[in-house]
Image 1 (cartoon, rainbow, N blue to C red):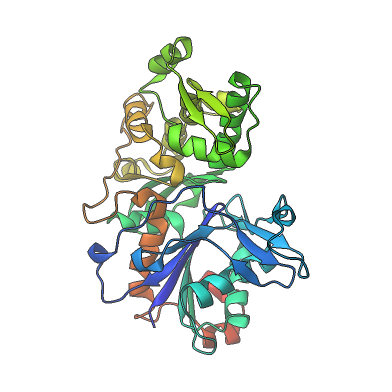
Image 2 (tube, rainbow, N blue to C red):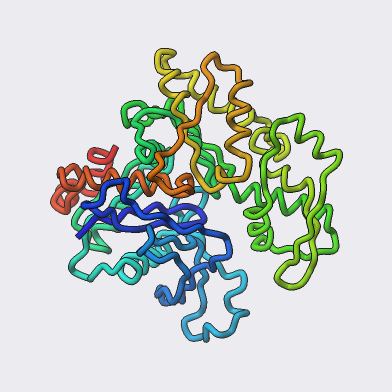
Length: 396
């Protein structure tokens, strides 16, 4: 049985088989994913009842990480029971609700991917930057003791995202739903002294967009779900700071009809979302913009590595797919304080167009075809002998 690769994010969980007899160039294209997907529904008896996901036949299973819990003795047909009763297994990139995550994984692995009880295979997880040791240990413990897996491996998302574009050294700027990671990687190892985690992500940009839309549309009743969908459709980046200031003075508006029939006008607000990444003061944060943050992180490593790192920069995470973001990032890079300008790596032509959304999963699929056949993973015998701490010795 092929190994399963799992990338559990704050908003979406990606899971699928790393097929050994398919080279990376044969990885099938992934579907586009939008916030219109419903949360998974869970009952009080810890049984997943339904969820919406992309077909595993065209890439990894992609489902919302957020779950909805309903009383065991109530009917799922009563929509009122599902409102505001949500469970978030992953918060700001880290697993927080282990019972909920166990439920979610059980459904994904056995129902979604077809594992059979008593015949479980290998599994590889992606690790966010600065994952606490306790989180890694609890994950490996659950997988061996509750899922009876035959082998385990975990690798940091920054390393895997570089693998996805054919690099072993470089920088990643990963803007997820709940966090942003800037990491430097040399020869497949994250340089933690020059890497930083920021607890800001797509969720914060959605809240900003909501605030701006409510100012200009005070009579429209907006839900966060509405705003998330509007952000995915309309949010974009101005060409540069001057262009953004010009847009603030005059900007054409579009009308959008919400599902309930309300009409909302969207104008300059769409540009504010992207601008906040380059001008954090919009979010009331005293911090440098994203490009300058990258340059400052890299300045802490030996100068002989600066070129190797900055000239192999990879953007990843759903927010990185925002219209105009890549162009704005590259333009800001030419204005940065560094003598060596950050330069973005283009993904290989055989990779999917939306690779930024799945780069850690793709890199994990590539790595799984190496670590498991070469027995570099944590085995059941390793776990039984050493316990959960074995993950720190064998997964790095």
